[in-house]
Length: 432
Image (cartoon, rainbow, N blue to C red):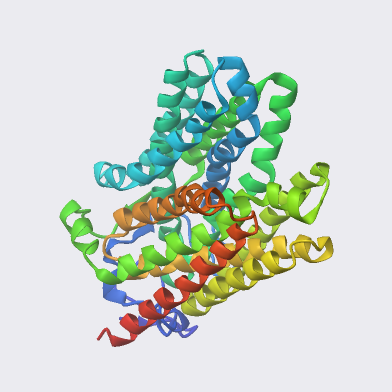
């Protein structure tokens, strides 16, 4: 082990430096010996200032694929009319995608464990684009449902491997920031990709937006193939090691925080259109712009969270959870007041996405010897949180509660997130 002139410690044989600040991070301690399972770039030097181009390339590809998730909700009536099915049947296309994401990530992580990361990324993008295209070329509802499920599988596989690849391109003390940038592709899909695809579909038919998604995904795959540095694990990947890592209770504490916090902000977001028109009294024409405001908040939250999560992950998690709870309570209490509700939508987006980089940072710290399966399960936890939203909201609304009840449910879920974060911190402090 030798000392670098800038005060960093360089491990003998290591590809990248580990900063002292990263090693002292509260609740996110980096053990130099535990980095064996994390990938390193075989070429392209790591910048200490701006993140490597490959990280942003991974974010662009996630933007392309994620746009399909947010586009579908905007064209459901058109799909139902074209295929002569009910609106609820068309809505099952959303569920098929979600089920694919929830159950697809972990098995695909094990299946592709020994594949080169770049190969896995390109393969999942190719499968995703092909599935989208096949679904667009058929008039069969059953075929479209099947292709949506396959899209979910490929999407989960790409997201998990992209996160692991991103942290392999940066120094260990910047993993949360790199993960945050990759996930920001999803917030951009919410802000721009989904609305732009819906507008394209308005002029070209519902298939037009999805053809745009397929084209962007293919472009992303080509760029990944040509411009992303090859990466490799420092040790031979082992399915047994990955599965052994998943037995750590602390990892499931973080997954619980992931599921709870995701459901906490998404339950308000998913019912925001009805909330704004029926309770706040905002004309429907303004609803899309306010939904975009939530996406802008998500992007800001990811930027803030990515910069603080590597050094103080517990702070980022607590700020996000408490922020979601406060914003949700204020939305419920101040629902009739336009001047209060609109900025609160922005605050909810910021608070909800401040947590995401810290969640990935915690997962990759706890499971640093075997990050692939752990990262894939994180994706499933996010999607499972989103999938629980209709169930929780349905219970309240079917019982006769008003639409403001969803904001109260979100506040309750966020409040429960706080003790799970504190439990994670307590376990970290007790570890030798």
